[in-house]
Length: 395
Image 1 (cartoon, rainbow, N blue to C red):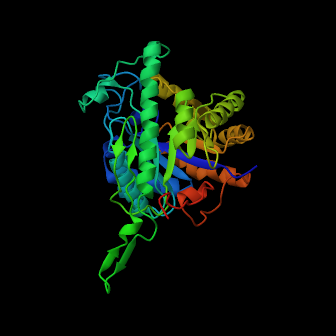
Image 2 (cartoon, helix red, strand yellow):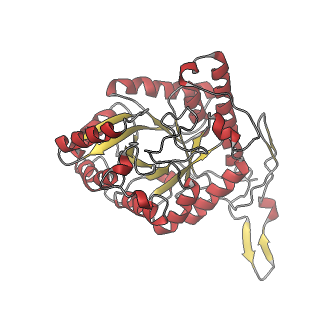
Image 3 (cartoon, helix red, strand yellow):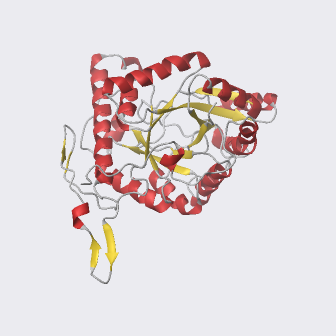
């Protein structure tokens, strides 16, 4: 079996809504640079491929489809994910940094500039988690569009399906614009020759002239070509529209099987989506998401889960595992045998479960020959076996 890709998803005090009330949590530090720097360094200590940082344009809610609730017993508020990634980049050397940026209310030009800047800042470790927004309250922050109230019970109606399809089509176009803007500067466009007074070779900077249903962007970008050429693009997918978005636009897709028996069907959906959109190039790398509550002793992990659930039950799109690092390693190995490329783990409580991932799970995977023992040189794209492509506008 090939070595696994292993990522971690960071969100506030952890993925469990009661995480901030745990004795090991640090709620007083959630909005500080020190807190996020410590988490990023921990992920790097564990040789993880990348970390993702959650973000949205609305306050957190118990149901991600609903408008913001008025609860005061759970974490509400967050720092901007892209800026968090930017200020931890100089404090790390290897781990990939992948902030979430929502396409629904963000101009592709802004996204291209921000992620390209992050790639320069991190010397080729930047990525972008593409996300759409279906919430009407988030749209109201901007006042440029009106989204219908989308509720769980109406997800299968034709009206909701059409609205969601539009959001995903818009997201795919946004990624296409961003990728073209990343290519709008060829490699070597900056000459920087003081003797001749030439800083820029203007023939290597190109307009992109993109016109589509949602965007009309002239280009070029304002940031020179990223070190990776194309920073890594990732997406989370649960259903057909999201699988097709990932197939059209992403390099890596995060999925949410709830058991080993679901993995073949999910992989089948991913590959069917690739065929449906006529995906060129490398197939999607497929990682599975898991919420984890870990302890050296299984009984202690289960007791912690019961304590958390008694305070505020977790509503999760991904499977939840409470147990030992060895039990998690067994599960990861058995799931990977079905054809997954790796996993994105969501620590229920930060930093507790991240530390167990780094200090106990990773050594167990290394003993089994399933995970690296050191970082190899190269960019985040190269870590996923992806080539650095030439600018599409190069002569």
